[in-house]
Amino acid sequence: MERSIQMYNAFSGVNSFENISLLNFFRVHTPDTEYCAIQEALDYALKNKPSFGGFVLTYSINSRIVAGVVVNKTGMQGFKSENLLVLAALHEDFKSQTTFLEELINKAVDYADGDIAIYAKPNHPALMMAKRMGFKEQFVELKFQKAALAAKVRV
Image 1 (cartoon, rainbow, N blue to C red):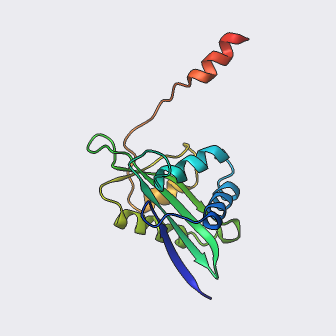
Image 2: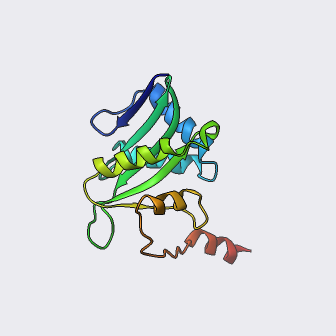
Image 3: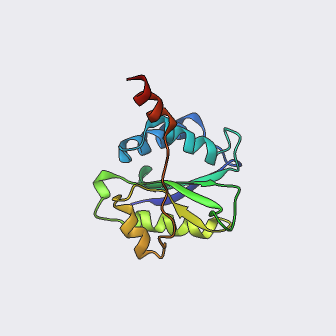
């Protein structure tokens, strides 16, 4: 069984096949995340859009992606973490083997310059794993969605 970890960033870039593979992997294995949000996270990490950059890590077995993370740099420090882990996914066939995802998150922590924050919904299963790995809950985010307000007003 051939195992490998691949890193993609603004310097390495991705070819069209890799881009489609990454998009499809995260689309299938982060079903609560909109496709356009996945594309945007990848574009920011790879600097395909103006951004501070970031990176993507994948864990593959026999050339099949079984785990992946996307980290975006925030351009901030101190009050906000320098890096934001925006996507973390484990292939459905490997849900009982969280070590693949843990290894990628540890590599992301090692590779990133500065602190990393995780952005996830309150009941997301990855939060328990992150806490076991040493991530600490520090802030609560309240999000005001102008689009939702505009939709209510039009009714």
